Image (cartoon, rainbow, N blue to C red; front, side):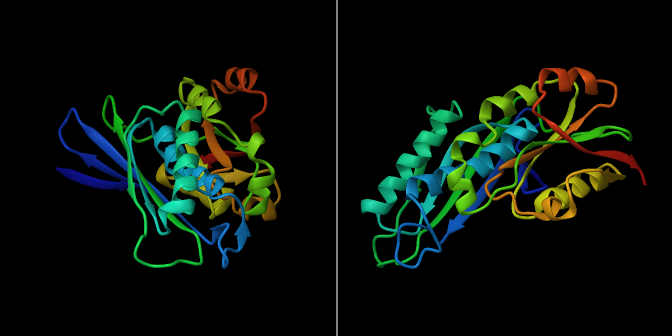
Length: 246
């Protein structure tokens, strides 16, 4: 078995025909417990935590096939609320039929919410590393939000349907969800992976470095030749930069 790392994913090449990708995320101090920093329904916490690995897998073309949650709290009531949130998010992503397994903490009393989620995905045609070319454009889908801002804007976060549509576009060269490191870091990562540089022309430096929490932003690399076609079909995308030779 061959193993390699791509961004935050572990890629397992079990055979020429079977390639898996493993993605994970964690959340702590966000919930309804005494020492939680952000007070919110644990179901929302769990849904946002699941969103991150699902977005990571969808963006590279891996179909999620199993989900495992590790809940560092008791089943009743916190665990049940988290599991319900996970199942709602699975349905939202059209994945309600894949296996869900997990564990809760029944031996210790906890005063802070804690959750980890691991999702396994499978490639139908093997893993193909995205290729971005000089003069391709970088677009932004969604706005960088974190903590209470995410809770206040749950209904307007970029959706799974948008992600699936963009992934199917011929003119889209690469997709990368943005988390705590911000758009500038992730955009530069996309560039360096292709031995390119990136010139940002918007938004401002503060927004470029702002955390995007649970993947509230997705960066989209668009072919220069097919830019107008993609923009016409997805007018809500915001152009923020262009890739150049180093």
